[in-house]
Image (cartoon, helix red, strand yellow):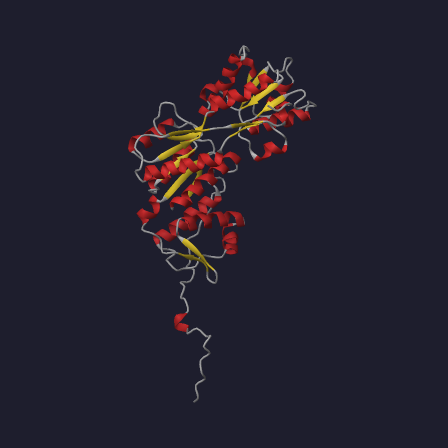
Length: 382
């Protein structure tokens, strides 16, 4: 029998890559009522499957479409979970073979190079910009990130931080709710962490934020220079004395500016708002202030919306200043205070990594500058 010559372009079968098939995996029932995002539940499930060997090195993960159908989630949810697994070094994407389980670093090494990030919300523009800064620093320093959300709950915040610590993450970066006890415990135990945006006065810890007192004072002074004397401060906390430090500091800056301008402080002009009705109550009072310093842009934008729907002119009937300079602020010409949110995240992550790597001893407190962005909602530029 004559043997045919081998085509030189053919690859011998013995040299083809051999991939383990996708094994039969334990079922996952997502908790759709949980405050924990679905993508995080997926990431934790598949991380555990890889770490315990249900998904061995070289095995293929189900396709994106299969994961969407199996777990009844969106493409975005699957991609977020897969991105987290990739950042942790647990999977890799291969052009012809799909998503494959990688050879992970040693567990202790891998965990120690993950930074846990806990923020109160998932869609807040300010937090998203901080996250971008954190990720930029981590990429530069060879670390990965894992995100959790407290949803403004001290209990969820503690649960997220505790889970990250128990997983032996290198450290955590947190925009705190109001849980000073939790962070006192972390400091006492020597566990690396950095607080951003909100500080605890009596706790010596690493912190990155802005001068909220000075920034709010500057915004109030701007209104005073425009001739306003009846200036209100709007916030969203039931009890201002129990509010986060950022809110209390911004209120203090507002009061300082009034005092410096010779305007007596009027307690009734400090107003807590939440639903549309409370905004309308403020706008329809007999002697309504002609200007407002809002605790943040979301409050300012809500006030502006209700005012316009009520037939008022901004800035003709009501001048408004916000705080944060979120993307929507420019679109409606809102005067506001710009916070360097990306830089906050960048510096906070570098400080945390320095502490993880034992390059710092004493707590570091970094206060970054703000900028008053003057637009049309006050009626005049500087």
